[in-house]
Image (cartoon, rainbow, N blue to C red; front, top):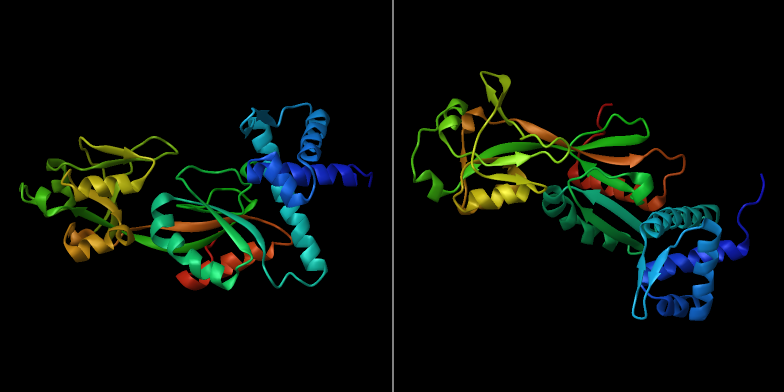
Length: 308
């Protein structure tokens, strides 16, 4: 194998990553016990090798270019893998360490995962967790994520998918909305009600409402003058303030149902759910921090791997 990276280049990559993470050549230089000029020369060396600008520099700050951001994500992932390989080779892999980047949907993050992270870091204090809350699909390689949680497993053989749970759906409305009246005994009555719409970010279509009728799974197409996209919690907030009916996950509105700020409706037709799955790339040597988090989350949520 022909050598492509010398010690000087690897050192330049480390200094570049330090500069990005600290937001300053001076701070990066202090952390690495070198001069700010040495950091600047390292970045210039990389820019010359790559033929692109990595930073936009002003007298007050540095800012990554688009090319610099993409290069940084790959470099950080590579450096983390090198650190993992070194820990494994020296028998230190039993103590997970490094940065763990997780992408997850907003509601699942707030109500399921974020409340567990303090316990995880108490168990593994050397792991730094970066949580990214978004409902869009991410690219593991380009964006440098270790794990993602999504509502379904994509048809991608490069990813491992493990089911976290089937989250139960409920239809809710506020007491203020219900005081306006209107028959609501079966899903057929929804045509006479204000139904808050949620738009799927992947397709732009409105999410159908799911019910069970006589033991069969059915979908209901609803209509309404309110729409929400990007965050399911927006629909919950609208319902909480009397805008109309909304179908959402029970785990989001459990406290509202207990406190009476929302009421559950169409209970005889309930019981439907949507899955949440944990995704991560196939890897012959999965880093200890990723493996530890996967085991931790599965343990806490007490679920089995999804059938693929």
